[in-house]
Structures are given as C-alpha cells and as structure tokens.
Image (cartoon, rainbow, N blue to C red; front, side):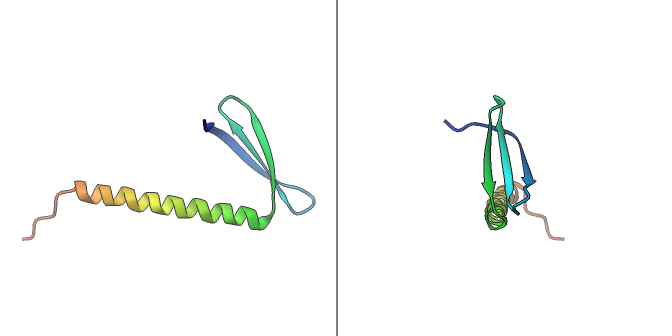
Length: 71
C-alpha cells in the first residue's frame, strides 16, 4: 500500500548532489541522494503530470458550463 507524503526537503551537499528527505504521515523518513540531472527529470515529470491533470480538469469544467448566448 502506498504511503501518504506528509512533507519533504531537498538539501544540497558538498559534493554537488542533493539529499531528498521524504516523510510520510506516520513520521517515517526516507533519504535519497540525487544529482542535478535527476532532480531536473523529477521536476519535468511533475510538471507534465500537473499539466495533464489541469487539462483534464479544465475539460470537465468547460463541459459543465452552459454555452454563452449570442446576441
């Protein structure tokens, strides 16, 4: 079963990498080391998913609104 993300932090280290701390709602924390390129790929994947979700949400909203009457 997937855990629910409660919070996260990203901190740079002296080697030019980053440490991701992911904490779930039970307080358990997992740490991951990632390079700049990996973080960039994560950002791109998140942006793509949010854009798709936004497009889907807007399509539903557009269908719910009545068409404007022409004068």
